[in-house]
Image (cartoon, rainbow, N blue to C red; front, side, top):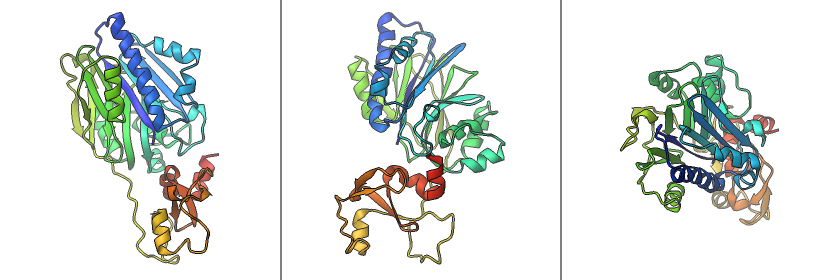
Amino acid sequence: MCGIFGFAKSEKVLSSVGEHQLRGIVMDLACLNESRGKEGTGIALMAKSELTVLKEAKPVSELLKTKRFRELIRRITSETLICLGHTRLATVGSVHNDHCHPFVSDDYVGVHNGHFLNRENLLNKYQRTAQTPVDSEAIFRVLDGEKSVSGLISKLQEMSGDFALGFANVADPFRLYLLRNEERPLHIAYVKRLEVLFWTSERKHLEFTLVRNDLNARVYELQPDHLYSADVRQFNGKSNMAKHVCKVEPPQWERWSGTTEEDFQPGEHPYLFDFEELEACGFLEGSGITERSKIPCGGCQNEMEAGKLFYDEASGEFICEICSCDFSAFGKERFQMEDK
């Protein structure tokens, strides 16, 4: 679970108060999204002829105390057209500055909340190379070369995973793209007074931020499986967003159905048992493990209460919820290799 947030703004010149509100909302959304990820923070600002990116493997609460973060926030002015922000909860890829979002590819800059499961297949198909082991980067590498909405949709619909995306073409700072499927949240609010479309993962974060900055706007959840395009040159009383059907296939986690060890085939996704199911099945009988026992996660090695861990029946490992998606999708060896 990561947090994504930002805005798309018309070319309207804001008053000093308006610019102050714009900066305040970005800072508030960044701070609120720390609850969704503390292992990295990043913000990209796009103007007509300039792209500025700051990203570090630090929580927002630490980064905002630095001079470089404050200088970035001051760069948010009437000239800023698009902002892309991200707070990272590391799953694939170690905690490192280069592994933080936003990612900048040849053509795109973007942020992602979720997992991109078939990235290797699509990178090979389109002869692209990712610079990091982070699955999210591969999304924008695969999209490279596509300029049209139809081309973007064609490639996005080949992808499998849980997705909430915000991205823009580096050569087109006037257009923001947003997308989610059922597995990940994404909310928007258009502030008519500023002619700015704000967006973030959680509804409550956006509602709180608007009230705190004395702005009034309705908050909407984006419809899943649609690519939204917001052209800031068309902002006025409304955001006038275009919407196109774009179905990103969700993860196909197959429930365990009583197969034996001999029946298990590589590539199948093992069912992850929670503590209550393990106890009911008698798997913990005589082990001394209780719901409050501290057990190391087989993926990240962090000790957690047994009731907050899953059990991978195929490997015999206890796994935390954060690691479970990548652990079951790619196998223990690859997961540990990529996280070094």
